[in-house]
Length: 58
Image (cartoon, rainbow, N blue to C red):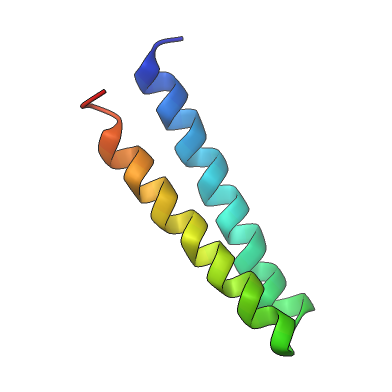
Protein backbone atom coordinates (compact mmCIF):
# COMPACT_ATOMS: atom_id res chain seq x y z
CA UNK A 1 0.00 0.00 0.00
CA UNK A 2 1.37 3.35 -0.99
CA UNK A 3 0.56 6.76 0.51
CA UNK A 4 -2.24 7.51 -1.94
CA UNK A 5 -4.02 4.26 -1.08
CA UNK A 6 -3.77 5.02 2.64
CA UNK A 7 -5.17 8.52 2.11
CA UNK A 8 -7.98 7.12 -0.03
CA UNK A 9 -8.95 4.61 2.64
CA UNK A 10 -8.74 7.30 5.34
CA UNK A 11 -10.97 9.56 3.23
CA UNK A 12 -13.54 6.79 2.85
CA UNK A 13 -13.53 6.02 6.58
CA UNK A 14 -13.93 9.71 7.44
CA UNK A 15 -16.86 10.05 5.03
CA UNK A 16 -18.59 7.01 6.52
CA UNK A 17 -18.09 8.25 10.07
CA UNK A 18 -19.31 11.72 9.08
CA UNK A 19 -22.47 10.21 7.61
CA UNK A 20 -23.01 8.12 10.75
CA UNK A 21 -22.62 11.15 13.01
CA UNK A 22 -24.92 13.33 10.92
CA UNK A 23 -27.42 10.48 10.80
CA UNK A 24 -27.29 10.20 14.59
CA UNK A 25 -27.83 13.94 14.87
CA UNK A 26 -30.90 13.85 12.63
CA UNK A 27 -32.59 10.62 13.70
CA UNK A 28 -31.44 9.66 17.19
CA UNK A 29 -30.59 12.91 18.98
CA UNK A 30 -33.09 15.48 17.79
CA UNK A 31 -32.57 17.68 20.87
CA UNK A 32 -29.59 19.83 21.85
CA UNK A 33 -27.11 16.92 21.69
CA UNK A 34 -27.88 16.57 17.99
CA UNK A 35 -26.26 19.92 17.28
CA UNK A 36 -22.95 18.62 18.63
CA UNK A 37 -23.16 15.38 16.67
CA UNK A 38 -23.99 17.34 13.51
CA UNK A 39 -21.09 19.74 14.01
CA UNK A 40 -18.62 16.89 14.55
CA UNK A 41 -20.00 15.09 11.48
CA UNK A 42 -19.46 18.19 9.34
CA UNK A 43 -15.94 18.43 10.78
CA UNK A 44 -15.31 14.84 9.64
CA UNK A 45 -16.45 15.84 6.14
CA UNK A 46 -13.98 18.77 6.16
CA UNK A 47 -11.08 16.54 7.21
CA UNK A 48 -12.02 13.97 4.55
CA UNK A 49 -11.99 16.77 1.97
CA UNK A 50 -8.46 17.72 3.05
CA UNK A 51 -7.32 14.08 2.86
CA UNK A 52 -8.77 13.84 -0.66
CA UNK A 53 -6.98 17.05 -1.68
CA UNK A 54 -3.67 15.71 -0.36
CA UNK A 55 -4.01 12.38 -2.15
CA UNK A 56 -1.96 13.30 -5.22
CA UNK A 57 0.49 15.70 -3.57
CA UNK A 58 2.06 13.68 -0.75
